Image (cartoon, rainbow, N blue to C red):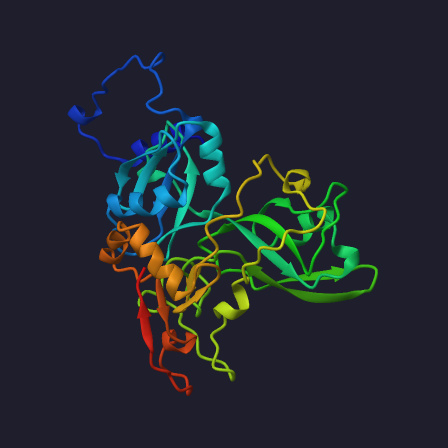
Length: 339
């Protein structure tokens, strides 16, 4: 449905007085765009609490490499408009998703001049997913476009020039629905073997999500369907199952620009610096105390993140974040790392 149709349907449901129904006629045919849509996107921080725009700026500017001409302007609670000096920088940042303000993911959406950012639907997150231990015969880009479809909208599959995938997993760029639980497995039925196999799925640079329900952006305080611990003292969506280990390994003979694609997308960065917080455990590059503390010194604006209530790294075991109701012993945190 077009934006104009949505507005008309909304107006049809309103009971306007005669004065309210007296339309103001404007001649906007030749109006210039407020922003260049090719150099701009909307952003929304997926957080239950309001985060100040200055905090968002302090996190995003260095993460995006302080591109020339970047401005961030407010558009509502946790909403902002990011305008870049060039389309190339805009596309590079969008391709680098997921980005985070502290532990909260930032959802990005291209600008639609006929819609208010407040009414825009932010329900998709672009992220790299890995499908583990696929048999060699399935490690092909064309098969990846099919196999990864349950995860989300498949944008492309990382493969070499002739469509072959290399390594212990298939790497796919997908847009997942943030209103649905993260997918833990994809099940493939082989006509050749007459059998079905479930293959594990992991995600790179995975932002804050709840181990109980697998939904992004909230925790036990706001979850409507908390789960019980299993016999291994794990919740259904534990980080050690869903969070991919960061690796600097480059697939031999692999080029994202030559990978099979399900849509037009611009090859670019693999994402943020590779470090993330999952259930109290800091995962990935930059998770060490020295480098974390060093970042605090280099970026004093991280103070703003702490003011928003975000602790960037907490050295506690995963069980510390589990809800009560399980029989597992809960280890005490031994230190708190800020920065």
